[in-house]
Image (tube, rainbow, N blue to C red):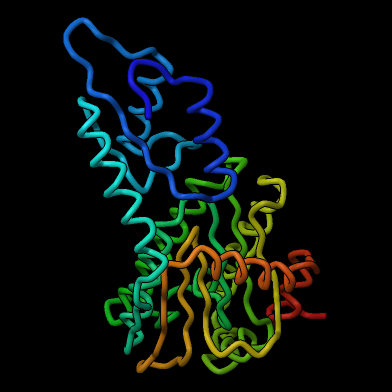
Length: 279
């Protein structure tokens, strides 16, 4: 709760909630004539409203109040909503398009962390059909990649944000061979450039943003945000996935993915693993 100033206790509470990825319920007292907020609070609320602040996390609840009775009702409803989230039914999809749309929504709702595993990395290979100029058929996959790139560009400079992108070296190499992508030098050069850009980002971000190869038997892609995850159970056009808003499961999945990201390969080693550079 805040009114005219960004009190130290409230600020510390907000920072701890961000640090531990906890729901944030923000209640701002409406001012009357001749009352004015401090510059610090004005700046925070402004960045919160327009999304311009690098270190500002959008809260689960952001409400204004004037009377104590209004505040009491707002707190009660907000807390009830947060409790209800733990009992929400899982969401499922039955098509590839629905699956990617689900993944896109998880990326958009992630503020602090984003962990992904894809057998073949769409952000590196590009949207299908890989060599086509027009990706109308797979527009949802193109949108997924664009939203993901936007999330990376927006968040990689913020110290509290983290990103991990894992993919299968073997499956990606098979995809490149199956689609005869190596027969197209321009495409391979763009692919190498995407990998190099991602690896350079590791250093720039102090290794908070990382990519890596992993070859473990996971049935389908996996995406984990702050408190929502999506797990792809089947691939192909009739893809099946399940998603739920559950912070505890998200934290478990994050630990599992971290366990498979200890070995870091340099750019040339990744090129060789994918068969796009000679030994």
